[in-house]
Length: 409
Image (cartoon, rainbow, N blue to C red; front, top):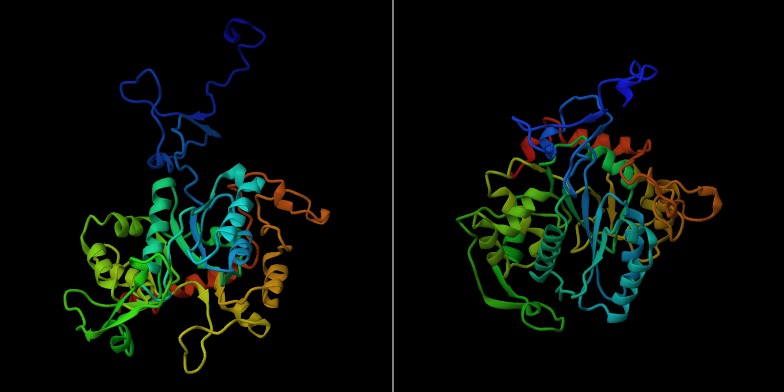
């Protein structure tokens, strides 16, 4: 029509402003666009066509968090969730079997009632909880259970992070996502060493049995009289149980097309504190993954001198050190520790009961209401100047003295 009218035939541009790919020879419909087409510089403001849930925003990553707690920690898990929430990420919440049904139900009701969660559908609560024995293999079994749920239900994400009710963020998700968008998506943050030292005689050689594997009530681990030798078919590694691991590595751990993950899972069934060794030993004993490690757990943690079994509880006196560390997370905190309020106010700009604000929040922060109740583009990331501290830390971790020389040594 436009080309048959003299008033309009000279007003046309012969382009539809869409990036479209066709088969050769062309079919009835254009090709479905995939990740491999992302780098093509068309200049077009639009593109088509896509399948449902095709992962398009490849610049900004997607993080999958597993937040865990036990009896009496439901409120802490809720607070951590509000502090680390971003509509782009996924969150799996697990209160173990020791927590009461009422506590678990209260957490589930909160998730169901929160309008933001309903809109983005990215928060899940484990309905059938696992029994978790302190320092037993049921801890790693529960983590693998959570990872399997994330892999089954959510096809597109990049990194997995595990946090407990005693953890807390020091940076906003916008800051973390911004810095992670510049990283290769095959890097695994996992603190590790093969120098197991005293752990050889207190962890590797003793044989323990976790009753949580076959009982429904929590109890301590049992110690066998016999000892075992250090394995010779693989090398033991130990380190921090707090990890940031890639989806591809975790698919390998869960699906195990190589038998290594299953073999090591069987071995660590009788190993004290298996979360401090399982992923570390798997990743460092496989050629496809041993060169993907960054030897740090992205946590600020303080230990007594000499170190005790657990790290120190962080307080106001540690605030400046936390800030200067550049770490995006810290542990461990007691419930309602005053330094958490200081972190909320000065680092996260978060009010009590509100989400940490980010580029996706478009409400008026001066209204007294949560600015994230009114939300915009969930992909929009607005980093703050504090992202520079994480950038500085990552650059240091990747320099020639810290990266390759500290991988699986």
